[in-house]
Image (tube, rainbow, N blue to C red; front, side, top):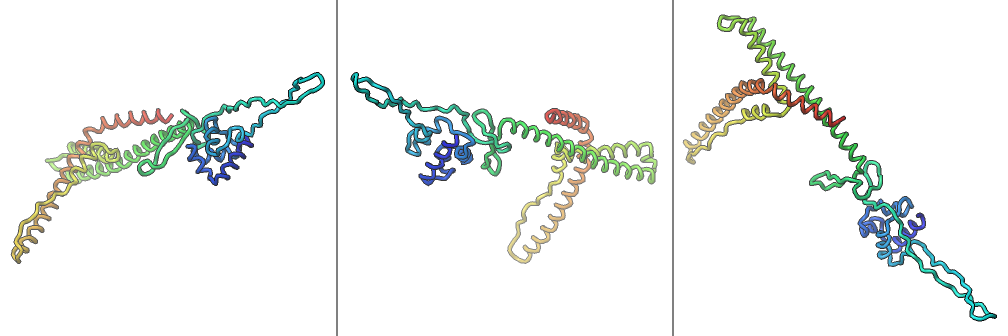
Length: 295
């Protein structure tokens, strides 16, 4: 209704209101007011009433309705005819129209109740986003597809680096066994041990990319030892004592930290080798679930 849009624009400007000011009074967006004034959409009946209250005008003035005048001949006497205007009651026209709560950010489609979802982003969820149900479904589908391919790339990267590390360690130990054969460790025993160590390193490096319990156990052994404080006297002998003890404690802290790390290097790959089959099965099942969700 172009005439209605022009009147809304005219009365709004008379009150020196911006489209945002008028939208705030009506609890709608400035875009909705712009669409009314451009004739792209129409306000519903309740909004029309609110507009009339804001503009201090009647509904007829806003809608441009004029009361119809009808001439009716009334016979007062045989020789005289009086023309009297009869004003028909004007019934307020209620425009049946879809209620618009906002516009989809993706397709700019107007959406009403139960036709959209609201999401939040930014720090503390300060930014609000509106998506129609169709665009929101596409957005969720695209996110699932992205999660599936990210998961797939992570698996590929973990197997590549795990395989490189495992094969390198396997070759290193095999060469060492072949070059330094001894009665204590014959080649027949060195080959299986090399294969196991290569497998353990492969399982360890692979699962480090997955961020499971292997990663937690490994970082547990990366802790450094904190030495207690030292009590000393404020004289020359006390300061010398403090310096000597601090240096000694620092060296001891480094030695203990290195020993703990070496213990972790032994324990963590062994643990990784034991749980790798179970973890791999769970990983494959998760990959299957993500693939089904993405399709």
